[in-house]
Structure formats: structure tokens, C-alpha cells
Amino acid sequence: MAYRSGKGDGRFDDLKSASAQIEIGHRVAYARQVHSRTVIVVDSAGLAGEGDGLITDNPEVILAIQVADCVPIFVAEQDGGARGLIHAGWKGSAASIAGEGIESMVSQLGADAPSLRCLLGPSIQSCCYEIGEDVAEKFQSRYLTECGGNRYTLDLHSANLDQLIDAGVKGENISFDRRCTSCSGSGLHSFRRDGEKAGRNICYLG
Image 1 (cartoon, rainbow, N blue to C red):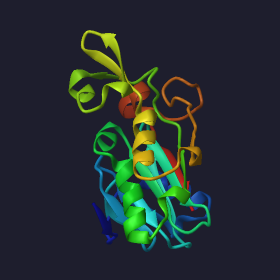
Image 2 (image 1 turned 180 degrees about the vertical axis):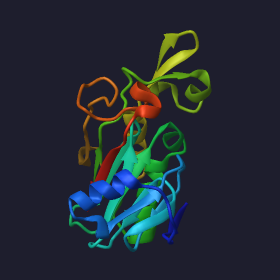
Image 3 (image 1 turned 90 degrees about the horizontal axis):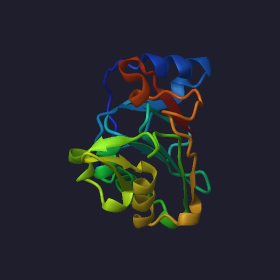
């Protein structure tokens, strides 16, 4: 579902601090992320509500999400009009939030899906993303690799790639940053690696 942003309060100290340091705090829109398939149509800066996808066609607004292993998906029209930023963990991926984001951009903002360009940013990769049968059963087998004892590894990038293509995005317009947040030594934050001590990677699209 997509809905218009409202006002509210929340604790987003790191995001606000980072935004202030690069002098864009007054333009940043963000959400209270809950691992959903909810996409919010954003008209102005500030806390947009509860959801995991943000879309806008307001050139003054900079979208922001926070991730720490989940896939950040950046979407933009080639002419710089409509833009979207999606937080896709396993729950959102299982619910096809990537497809919902594209469909919302088309229906709510008039975007043309085949002309959209997408980037799937760094996330935990299948080398490090071991899951149990309870999660595995929510995904098609082509995204899973068995590793014994009813355990599997999950390829979140491939799952979201297929959702974007199914929603009308051309494969040649989709790019990847395949660094693994958990093991690449890139300095990126990882919840799987660091647990509750993990920080968050802040993603902006403007």
C-alpha cells in the first residue's frame, strides 16, 4: 500500500546528526522502518510515518533510509523527476516491497517503469546470510542454497532484482553494489556481524 506522509515524532539521532553535518537536514524525509511492504508518498521533509519505502516527485526533498544488512534500493527516473528509496530486508523482500515501490511510483507519481533506473546497494550477501527453514519457506527455491540441517543461505539481491523486473523495470537499467555488509571489510555496518552493537548505514537519494 502507498499513503501520503503525515507528521510525527521519532528518535533518529544518527540520521539527523549526519544530515546536519552535510547541511541537508532541512530537506530530508525519513520513515519509522518496520520491515513492511508499505510505501509512503512524501511531499515534504521530516518524519513521513511508518513504512519501508519512500517515493517523491518533489525536487526539494531528499529521501533517507537506514540499513544494516538489508538491501537499500535506489530508484529514479532518468530525467530526475520521480524518485524512490526502499528498505528491503527478508520480511519486506518476501512481501515484494520492491515491486510495490515501483507500482506506487507508476500509479501515484506517473512514473514510467521501463525508464526507471535502479541501484541495489550493499547488503548482506548469500555468503553470510544463513537462515532457518521458517524464513526459507517464504522464498522460491532459486534464491536459496541448502547448507545442511534445515539451514539455507538466501540471496536477497536476486529476489529484489526479479521483483523490479516483474514490476516493469528493464534489466539493463538495474545496477548492483555487491559488497557484503557482513564480510567485505568495507567498513559498512552489519547487524548479523555485530548484533545490537551494530550502527546503521544511512542512505540518501536526492
